Amino acid sequence: MAQEKLRFCRLCDIFDSIPGDISAYADRLYSLLDEKEKADSALMKQRIAVCDECDRNSAGTCLECGCYCIIRSMKQDNRCPVDKW
Image (cartoon, rainbow, N blue to C red; front, side, top):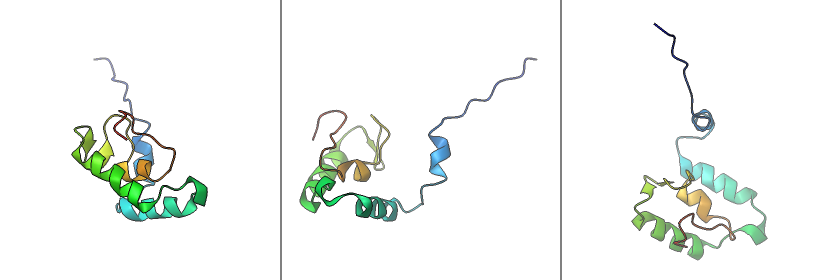
């Protein structure tokens, strides 16, 4: 029997470095952004509301690009990968 070559997703390796509480991680990332890069809280809430209703959202993760919706929403010039915002 031929030995199977195991393949691992490169993204799976990063999950060990992301804390279980993604909101704390997101807060830290937001605090590190330059002020002129940050989306304001109203814009972030609007974006998250759109993501919450999107069929490409799976428990806060965008199935189109693999980003956490909350993290993608934080930067002023970020865009939705399917042009919903």
